[in-house]
Length: 113
Image (cartoon, rainbow, N blue to C red):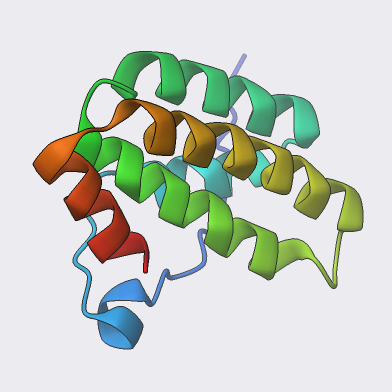
């Protein structure tokens, strides 16, 4: 039996050229791959990433940015996926706004503004 190769194209996240922010994680790529496998995969990717990285303010900030951009990516093409991303965004943003303090919260607002 031969192995099967799976090719998934990942759209470029132009956040650096558009906003001057240089990504520090693979969240955009991770969620873009999950997109190809549907809502369950997106939800699973979020649960794993959020559980692992919610304690890192810079990674949490980038996750919120990615989730927000994913809403915009999908709202005209796949409203159900966009709604899922909106729910995940709300959860992550609320967590960040309620748990980050001091310089970490300042960073969050500066980057996501």
